[in-house]
Length: 349
Ligand SMILES: [Zn+2]
Image (tube, rainbow, N blue to C red):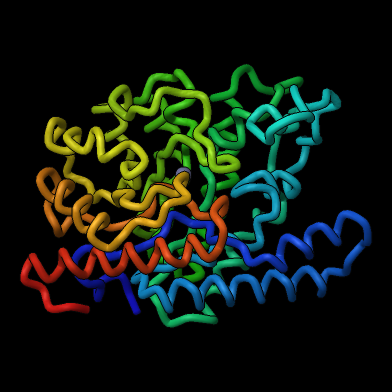
C-alpha cells in the first residue's frame, strides 16, 4: 500500500517499539557468552515480527520495524560501523546512581569518519517491507546526533564540521532506503533543541542530509527520551522558528502531549505550510491515555493545523516504555483518531 491511499489523519509511530521481556533477557545473555550471527539475526527478525504484529493489531496506518535491532539506543549502535570513531578512553562522567545522559561514553574522532559498508538500515527496511503489507516509515538518526557525542581529536574543526561528514554517510543510507522502496523517511534530530547553533545552520545541514533523496521526508525534533527522561534543555521549539522552516522536510514530527499541547499555536503564528506529525501520546508518562484524551488533543491541534496536513503520532519513540503500555497507548491513539475522523464527517476506516 502506498502513502497515497491513507485515511485522513493518518496514524503513525516515531520509531522504536516497546521491547518484549525476552529481548532484554537475551541481551543480558550476550554479555556473558558469545553468540553467533545467526543467533543475533534470528532474535532481531523475531522481535521485528512482534513489533509489526503489535502495530497492525493496534490499527496503526503507517508502521515502522520498531527499531528492534538497535541495541544501543536509536543510533549509537551504528557508530560501530564507522571508521576512525573508537570509544573515548575517558570513562563516562558517571557510572553510579540513576541511569542518565551522563552515563554515556563518548566516541573519539581520530580521523575522517566514514561507513564503508553503510549503516545497515537498508537491510533492516527490506526485512520490514517483506513482512507486512502496511505503508511504512523508515527512520534514521540525523548527523548532529552522532556529532554531538564525539570528542574531536583530529581532522575536524568543530562539531558542525564533523556533522557534515555524518550527513554524507546518512545521505547515502537514505538514498539506499529510497531505492529499496521506502517512500517515507524520518530523520531524527533531537539535538536541534539541545545545541545552541543558529536554526538556519541546522536547516542547511538537514538539507545536505536529504539532498537527492527521492522520498517523502520527515524531520523529528523532540526533547529526548533517554531512559524516559528529556535531555537538558528548555522544552520549547520557539527559538527554532521560523528559520527551521528552511529545512526541506515535508513533515515535522514534534512533541506536544508531554507539554499539554503547548506551542501548537506556532503553526498559525508562522503560517507553517508543512505537514505536522503531532505527538498526542505522552511517551514519558506511565499513565495510558483514553481515546477521549487523544480526541481532545487532536481537536486542539485542528484549531491550528488543517486536517489534511495533520498526522497523528506519539511524542517520540516507545523504546523506553514497557511493551504492554506501548500497545495500550497505541490502541488509544487509534481509537481517539477514529472519534475525530467521524466528527469531521469521514467514514470510520
Ligand atoms: Zn524523539
